[in-house]
Amino acid sequence: MERNQLLTKKRGREDCSMENQGTDEAMAEEEAHPYAFHVSGPRNVASPNWRDLINSSWKNENYKRTVIACFIQAVYLLELDRQENRTEENALAPMWWMRFKYKLTQTLVDERDGSIFGAVLEWDRTAAFADMILIRPSGAPKAVLALRGTLLKSPTIRRDIEDDLRFLAWESLKGSVRFKVALDALKSVAENYGSCNVCIAGHSLGAGFALQVGKALAKDGIYVEAHLFNPPSISIAMSLRNIGEKAGFAWKKLKSMLPSSSESQATNMGDKSSTIGFRNWVPNFMDKTSIGLKKWVPHLYVNNSDYICCYYTDADGPEDKNANKENLGCTNFTNGQVAAKLFVMSKGKQKFLEAHGLEQWWSDDVQLQMALHNSKLISRQLKSLYNLPAPQPTHVPQ
Image (tube, rainbow, N blue to C red; front, side, top):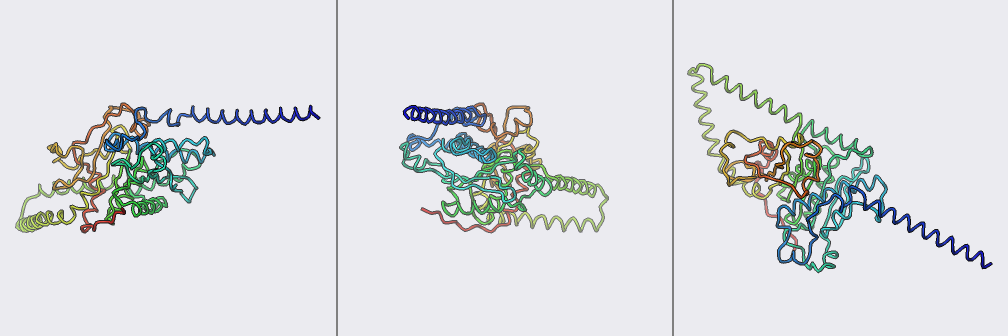
């Protein structure tokens, strides 16, 4: 009898040992994973601490860019964790937001395939209190909506590519189910926390969604901070539009070479009068909409070696050759109204996968320069905001 009891105890110890060994192996595998935060995350970015109450790190543009890029990486990993059936114990994603005192409050799911394409991260007061951070540091958003780009994995690649082709064909993502889900989520957090305390961010395809969702809210007078990494800039619609513009320019040049007549002179007089009328109208028009243009200024991060986003650096007209230094890094329309802040990676020639990757935006040797000219593409994309009446101020919850 005693022998049986001893054998039972021995087996129990062996079972516990095997369970602990399995747990240790899972933890070791997680620690060695190439997407683990301590392996591929930023090296020289400290977690928030009590010093941020005096001098907030969030006021530093490099820090803000780094943390927001990490939040987007967390969304990629949320989907990878789902596909690989990871548990809370060995999930890779949480460390990418917990390190900065944020928590996951909502995941955005594509109903077509069940994949996670976005997430809402909110300031975690409980975690902050534990580290003696009594209030949210100045500049830190209360909530961030992060959207991932295309994930080349079999469970989600079909729907990702479908939306990529949608943008390629129409330069619009409004027909996607993801657009409505993201728009509803952003409206919800903006209503809860106030638009000035909310940020939307995305990478690649996610940046395309973030730009169009942010623009849709701006039309309703709701302005949220936007950070767009490697946003798509290639589409068939854009190419056809460029061909049309070039054809129109060639036609005007041809008309100017034709001999003048009394009829053409009368036409020219009419054109001049209409041009004068238009010039007189533009300043009033800009005054009416200047409030909206000043408020929504998306931040774009592009790499010239990335053929997906490089067209954002194309200048908007010949006047850009004499760009004023005061407009450094800002694409604008007229009268100094800022439309977007454009940051260009200045590492020289790179391979496509490196130039389009998200990791470059938190690397230690990141080299950014401000654009010296207005972006033709962003000016065209935000042009419709001109048609807005002066927006009413939105209520900000206390």
